[in-house]
Length: 368
Image (cartoon, rainbow, N blue to C red):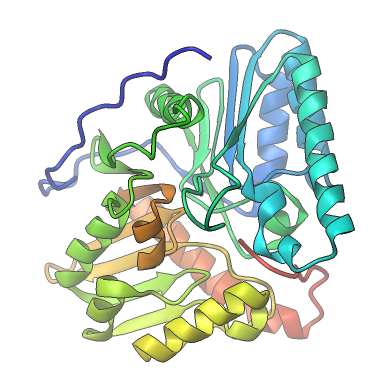
């Protein structure tokens, strides 16, 4: 394995100095199925590179075409690199199932990796199977195909991830694609003795890409959320979990709307986590739909009247910060992005219960 690219010095200054500087060009919010279909089409046409990082990946009904496109791209000489966390076959839903099922998941994962590597792709497992299952996870989701990026959302690449209430943002920008390629390299080429890298901020005009490098206790995403909420007059949060820690306390002290899963929506481990967080914080959720909510966004109205959003893979809970989880998010003041996030909230989070009562076809068993 080649040496990892040097990790930049963390940016300690606030990502924004004010003003309406232009950010990333035309980010487009895509629902999980649309994201997978769009990425599949672009991988089929890729000429130079594909970088894919995810918490979980599987060759299942909704991801099969993408897997085949990755294999075909590698065979025709495209530089295809894929990284997934060992959580793919270790997650707590699987640990509660019979050993035979867990063994099957491992075999399926090994078979997928073998198919990809035989075609010429480079596959890297991230994280460790030792110790606490939640420690040192790579929760980052990103996909780069030539100069197009998919990021700042939470979609995992398996059937459960494809059917959750979630999204990814597509951005056609070579600069962002190159930056996310570097982020991929930092994760995939981290030495086995490295705990993580310091978090940092990469600026793209008026937008900031926030990167948590997996150092326990160090999260620029959570830190920026705390700083912004402290100066906000209203907060709208969407997450799979109840917000906790200092952020949860700050949200309690100002007008807010919280949308996260009810405990009964989740698998056993997540059910306990959500219920305990609700009991400790006193927060209640407005989410009433049956489909598992996996999207993660924080939209704040500031004292100036300006709106600021953070969207990405971070669930806005303090436990992930303590444990050192690798995350990726976008901080933005873009009206285009914020309007899309609010439309997603209205159509798929608030109105999701209406569609459930009409008999929505997909109901995932659990999210991650």
